Length: 91
Image (cartoon, rainbow, N blue to C red):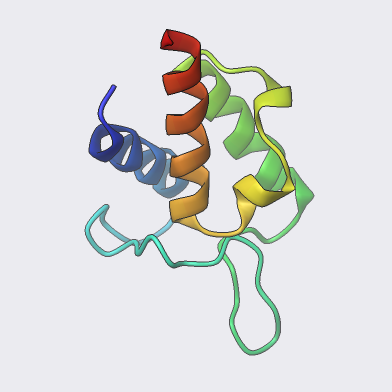
């Protein structure tokens, strides 16, 4: 699966699960998933992480262990991790 397809599907999942009022094009790859007081992230709480992870696991046929802390820095790092896991599975 191509990286841009994974990126788009990842953004679609985030928008759907988190009920974001954005389009795929409006959601930047640099958008933080966890934020701070100055720069809020997309995740409100740990339940949001579980919900997003569950949908991504079903969408891409992944395991929870495929994700790590580094996966959840930004929208782009999440899409990249999914790409990496899928690419390694094919090789």
